[in-house]
Length: 514
Image (tube, rainbow, N blue to C red):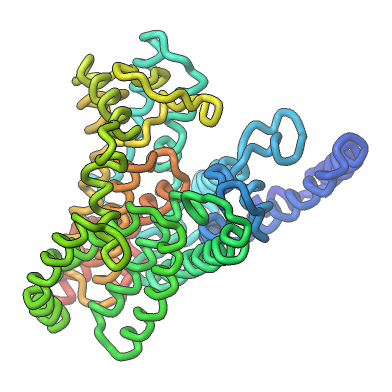
């Protein structure tokens, strides 16, 4: 592409088009008059640098800025990052006022960077280096996701489905394999785990401090009621950040890693407290259990097991007292109690989520094998409160995305869409027990933790429709797959540039045996 742009006729033609576009926008839409100039500079830069750099920069920016589509701060405050969030997450025609731009900058970036990499491979450019491959079963599972989405879309429309909501039902899952491809060509392998950890922890810190500032200095002084501080999906960032801090110490229990874990965990737990999402605590507790079960009997695990045995009677007594009187010191018990028995368990009124889940399960029972297909909402067997004035398509996006996937895709659709989840855990755990560097093992456990947080978000809070859930599960898929290749957990004959030797897995194993 760089050679193509350097041709004089092409260069002057594009320069003339750039000038005309800038002048035209200056007259029609002055607010975005500089957009062609900015776009031209970005294209010039992208033509020279490997795809790795813009992808990692895009990941960092997306995780740090406000997720504008999820109504951050309950709509009561515009943080310094709000504008950038709107620019990235909301359709450009809404942000700029320019008609015809019915897409987001994320869509443009993902498809543009994918097209750039494919073009480079097609013409033989060496701008991007060699790639550590993912295990073939994982690649096949991601292709199955695409095929399943296409089938569910066709099946739904053939049964009279509405194509407009169908597009939003499938959007994030359709982008998932494409984002995994971008991460695959951008992340070298386990040697990038430290960089990725810093990106995620930085994003968690930004969310935590902005959320605390909003609650303490804006919401409380004004007496504002808010269900959350930043957004629901920030739970994914918080839990991943905590898993990074915990596993970094548990796999390499040095004094430095211990105090780093304390600092990082303290800030993130502050953010979780102000964000007030029950799923965050449930997910992190499940991550701790998974890490404990997967890891070998190290010194840290022995100390943790002994402490758990000693504290078990105290914990049981605490839960028993808190269950009957979940206030004050015992208020954390109420968080878990409300998830098990519903928020209105004492009033005799069914919780909204319980009614919604009942309706979604009833919809699934109508066609348990193939589901309704995309473009259909779930049946209101029990009438729900009408929230269409807040969320027009609420029947197409149940809070429980897992049950929703069963309702819309049946067992066939669910299996095709969810296969990659099981394989990601399989490769992460398999790689964990074959990896030697502590950072590699910690990375494997973080991948499992991301899967746990993702499935919880899907089960409890519309995770399939979340950008943060999509980005972080795509990252976990990529890292688990690359680690499995590098650690020899899955044999591949494709040359791998990552690792110490830079050869194939067979070559590395041969050297090790020698």
